[in-house]
Length: 193
Image (cartoon, rainbow, N blue to C red; front, side, top):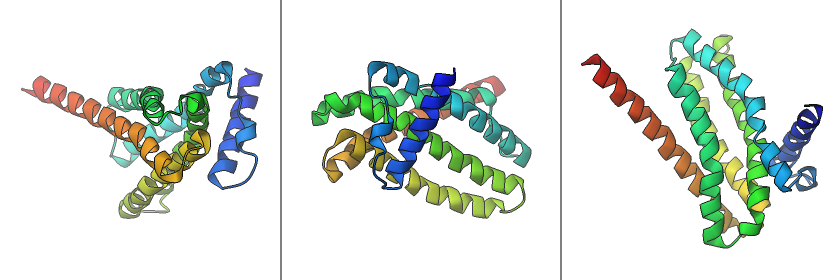
């Protein structure tokens, strides 16, 4: 467990170095098969944040079904490696697949920290719902840039190729989110009638 925490801390530091355009970030990752599987433990670092956001949303009256919320979290997290595998096959960068998934898994922890911070600011009364929505509008752009930067560094392909490649998992994640939301809405409508 201590090794996993240490690897997680190092992975998050490496991701932050990459996202802030500092040197040496790539060297902080274990890009072996073992490192690949351990990188999914980043979800364990994120689950407390996801849970905090769930309760913050409930507190603010914008909660959703816990089952749908956690299913979306799990499905979007797990859809990335599948979509990424397809994307790297198309561009011929299969040898960089492990690095991309590893960087992604540790890098998105920072995105979840941003999400949590935004909701926490509203719960603390520092911002209102309108400003929260504006911050999430900006977050949408930040998310795109983070995924693009991680793909660019991990895949070592030209900028435009990395942008299109990063768009594939993002699109799949959005489709998964919409699909789960619609399935729950249809189920609720059926139960209500």
